[in-house]
Image (cartoon, rainbow, N blue to C red; front, side, top):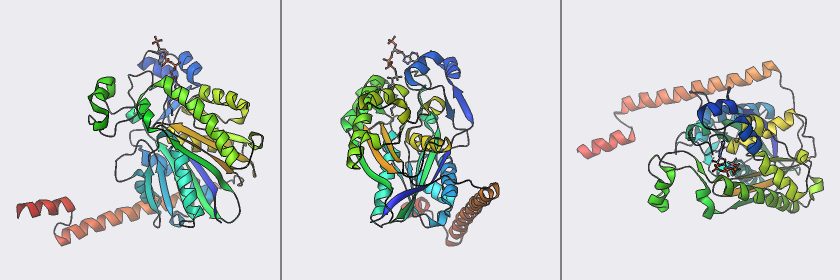
Length: 385
Ligand code: COA
């Protein structure tokens, strides 16, 4: 039997801070309204040159440094995201290239804010079956790019960022010990983001456009999502704890998807758990969707809240509707990495970019020598004939 242990973790937040007061200059809202309804004070916004893949790369590089794993030892890169740069290539493939993870497969996973829980489950199962031995699971978002900055019901909630964990197989019991993944597609319209500008899925019909979905931005029915979230957070925690053969008393810390403090307060009440069992950082980062759990995990570790042998619960929920949770047996002590060690590891990525450029250059030279091996150029030639 193989177990997928978390051996590394990393988070990356863009520098730019957007406070509630900043938002009050943009839409009709206030710091007081936002804070009392959500617990959010500020969020981060990606810079012009930052993308979901660059944020994901930064988080993954940090997680690999903690794991002391060379990128070429990775078997799989998963990026859970709702804001990929392209439908394809996957953001994960770009991260694979930036890391120089030359032996790894790479794909994106779309399960909205539950994406990290889903991806952690997929990678852990692949390790448990022996199909792979190592993986980096990343949640990364540039939600500011798909935000309707005139809609005060949504733009106050979300932020940008990335978080990652490195998984490695071991015969020692540990890592993800139980999990649940659920979905209810009938609630898809409660929280959605069309894939293509002005071209929503035909299934949703003209009614969908009339309801203000003409833009490629997030739309949400806040009240209904709130009700859904409070129910599934408490339910899925109870399910995974029981599946792991534990009781709520055995759980040391719960790291929930950071959407809204009131959602977690309500779930805590249903479970009769004190709020200090839940680690929260939504006040400083807002809702970073797939990135929120791994970012919160990194902060919980930094705050000294994670100890070997702790039973930890991750729980997520979001568009789809999707939700899920997992119990993790925590078994790694944080290590201090020296400045020199960190810088030396970063040098690898400069070399990886150099190798990537060389491969691209090689392809271009090949194209010149062979005439026109670019697929659509060949197609055009064929049409002319
Ligand atoms: N500032 C000030 N007023 C606002 C506002 C804002 N940013 N957003 C909405 N309002 C107003 C509404 O227009 C409404 O005014 P009205 O009564 O005059 O019509 C009033 O506040 C109440 O709106 P409502 O939508 O019922 O507020 P709410 O108490 O449900 O709070 C959310 C709104 C979005 C904070 C809350 O529903 C929520 O957090 N839902 C879950 C969202 C979530 O977490 N989504 C992500 C899941 S992954």
